[in-house]
Length: 112
Length: 112
Image (cartoon, rainbow over all chains, first blue to last red; front, top):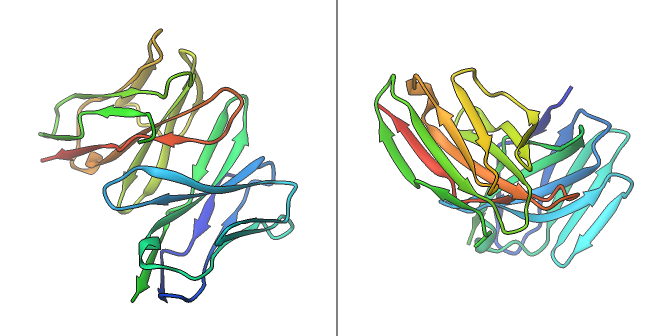
């Protein structure tokens, strides 16, 4: 089946690390993505990880993938108020075309 | 600016009516995707087109239809509108062979 689940809310203090978790069900996923949506805007790609990788680091962002448990996480180091947004986990399935399934999104609140 | 253009940005209409949402993909992108974002359902994949042909289908109602034209722009037609169709409709495009999606700013539909 195709399902991506993530918690709906996360609140952290400015300067702390944020960890947003996601689980997916389809083991044939080729890529897993994190998108960010700021108020009144469309989604923008933050980072992605190929399904044969365990970890990817990109400046303040660290993505961890546990394929066995079908668990993906996004860690944001030194979280800033500008990081307040909705973060979507997504998996892309190659079904002849690329079909991308999104989670419901985690709303991150950063308190100053 | 993602390069994906959606019109109109806002639309208010009555139940039973029909509307058309338009999307112009990024230059060079052959794939167009439509998503519906509502508070209770999250981001739902509706349909994907690749170079004019339907490639993947998601949770798209029979009252909804889409097409991609030879110039690669796409239209999403929503008919017999119901209150529950009120949502933000996003279009996204991707380059050939890439799963990364570039989203437009969305069309907000309100059905009264």
